[in-house]
Length: 94
Image 1 (cartoon, one colour):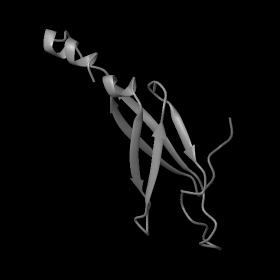
Image 2 (cartoon, helix red, strand yellow):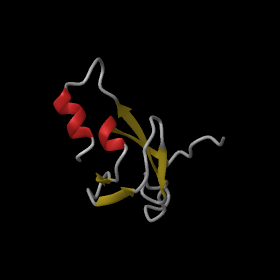
Image 3 (cartoon, one colour):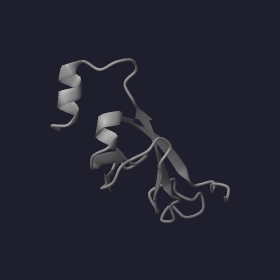
Image 4 (cartoon, one colour):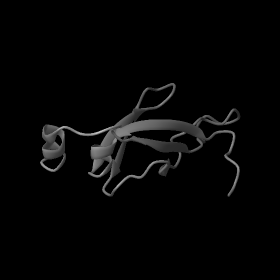
């Protein structure tokens, strides 16, 4: 495992347990320009899953055209306790 570069930007995205089992499509805003970066994930997302978007991180001090990576870590939340019958039914119809 390599150490993150100085220009690597890290972000934690919180996702519910039901949504983690489906396709995920979200936008991230970049620092500075505020540009929207799309992220699409078409598979099950597990807690701690990491996705790296190349050249979407922090700019270099010497050359603002060179950017590091944006690393997105998924924090998947699962319900605690028991689910109601409506919640159980809704989980399979989404």
